[in-house]
Length: 183
Ligand code: 5GP
Image 1: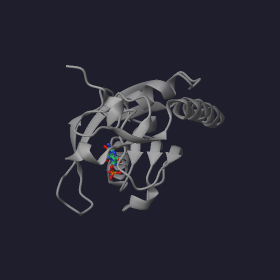
Image 2: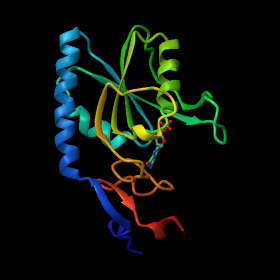
Image 3: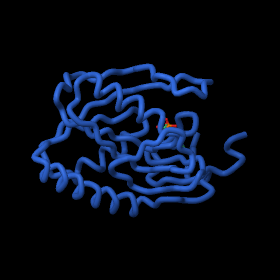
């Protein structure tokens, strides 16, 4: 069966070329900032959405970085500022480490708020955040990424790591699905 994932896309919000260019800029800015501070970050990427962003970003970071993965799940069906459940924890000690959290999108801000807290509790010396996308209009918790790829309007987006029912993560751009795909 052939599946043409591109035909499900209503519009492209961020093109593959724009992502490439922005990752280059972010990589340079991150390299310059950490070099200035005399630090080398450990990148902690949140599964599964941030994988394409991490993969591209690190090729533009000119430092001896290491990276690791975490998978967390927010407690569902609650409007409270709940904890997150850890589905996959880090494979290393991060005591004293300078962490750069890598996320696909900041929406309400709950996930990054909770994960940042968790990493500081594990002994991280510092936690900074880089997010490919930011939807500030949806924010519930006042949290601001240190580095942002693109600020986008309040639309549900897919592609470049972002899914709808685990699909469309492999689109090379960020887009919006056609309405009929949600039926
Ligand atoms: P937050 O904790 O900031 O509300 O949520 C962040 C997570 O919600 C993201 O890592 C992502 O998994 C999911 N999310 C938020 N907005 C979108 C969106 O527009 N599209 C997709 N595919 N996931 C989103």
